[in-house]
Length: 521
Image (cartoon, rainbow, N blue to C red; front, top):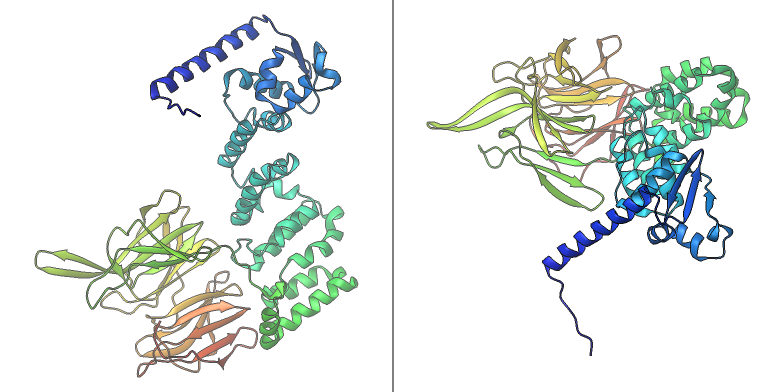
């Protein structure tokens, strides 16, 4: 009959103390070179050790000392693929069960831990490298992980590269990549860029680092650039600068397809439905956020929920610092920003409502909200967009005045700056980024509007676009396949079910299939 014995906490503590004493005693014997029966050599370093200790912690040494290898009985063994720092650290780990991983030794310790099959130590090295990730070093760590077959680290570093690509592309490490490595990064659907212009700029930065030898590599990189996602003026300028691409039949076909897509919105949409990668916008992993809002006629919310499409679930995070509705929300540098809106506070004499200009952001790593510099103007029912890592707050209502003012926020300096105002006052509207321009559409002036304006952040000027077919407020808007879509809303008299599509090349709105029911956003 089997008898199961329970081990008490005291017994476990005694075993732990005994293990520590045993390791300490063995390490003391090694340091005094007593009873050592093997000397390991790497570079010019010789390290004495006990075969039984090495074999006990490492499958590599166990096979070497207990099998039929020639090193089994050799008093001195010269090791390849490991340097002196790696060897000394590995032997120290064998006798102590722990070592300090640092920037100075990780590049030696990881290959040694990998070679000697010390999985816990290898895992610690990978965790350390992951904790040190920065745009300036991630490409080096990526290639290092690939060299040593650390695939979990490789995948995590690659995700970091894609997420922080706009900074990574400006580093010296990026300029040192091979054309194959550049292609591997640029062809990814989830490359995090504000527009395809960033990809074109990255290619140019890489080419200019060694133009004479890299000029011919452009034909290898061209399929990675989603040419139909570029503004027509940018595409034409690019082609004018690289006339030699026309001579290559594959490049010429890609260019012709891109120009055809740019000039024909219907063709572009059909090719997108056919899963044509050149017509798809980059799609970094995103989450849907529900922030604040109203609960009933007067009550406002401070709750924030995030929807993850991967597991189809909502998660509630730390609430806002105060209840808000009619606020604006955007993201930049993996932070969720909430701006302005109407604040509702309970006071002794009742509920107090006021329009706000405060700004706060949520850090997903700490799950904490941080307050930042307030906007210049108080705003509710306004629009906010992120362009090239700057926030633009546009229009809105402050309780007394409808705004046409626009202000830009730089998150690195935490400063708001006024920029050129819109031509019309707008509230209850949407703004979108399309082909490098900021589009503002419809809204309430008063009255209800169907006019469209677009802002060029380079020239800092506003221009007019083709007006929508319908006047709209409180509608949904988004960009897909190089076109702008508006959905539903209210025209001042009734709810709308119609959907319109705007083609920036032809500067024209077209009615498309409507939604099943009327409603506001």
